[in-house]
Length: 274
Image (cartoon, rainbow, N blue to C red):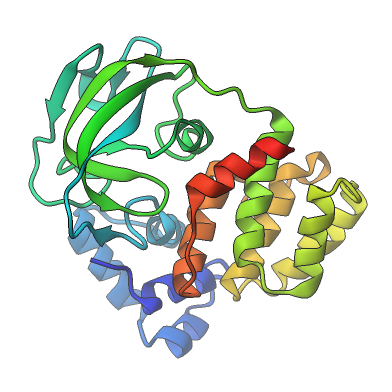
């Protein structure tokens, strides 16, 4: 299952709360969309919650794997080796998903990552463990949304050192994600200047973010605006402040909309240069 253009596009106009514009661009009404997602999750959702759901990990840009390959993966747990539903991991421990299907963020698959760096950088947007532990694991990938993957059965082999990511490197990860999809020249210029440490001032960030917010109907502009607001201390009071892991989720979805490749492993590796 792959998220449709309509689902991605309507998520971007939700940020403006403009349902007429949403219907114009996607031909999907508020009633139709809410009904669709309420049927999916069996609970009532507000418009803001649906905004997140459309862009949430496991919902957008997922493709079932055509080949199963037993590969090395990486699993995050809390400091006591637990994940959700009191599932405990350890050396040579195997668990199998209890549910049916292969949709991420359901009991049909177990989550894992393709690199240690991605696991650490995405933790705030996914499990959000306060003191995570990292494990080398092995499993057959059945689905991948670009930021994490899902397997039916996963075996954790042994613990691994947790990569250390500095605050600047974490911010660089978000900026690099935004740069992958940003199309407006002045936004790309600010992101490039930030990476080059030419201009990281709050004044410039505030100006660029404010202009981008007026263009929020364009998904890449809204996403870049949120990254800028999130990494500039002077802009922490602004709405939609998010983690750099969230930035990766949004960038991945925007890249899908743009029909571009989004290589999160390469981006995570590049952020170590800063």
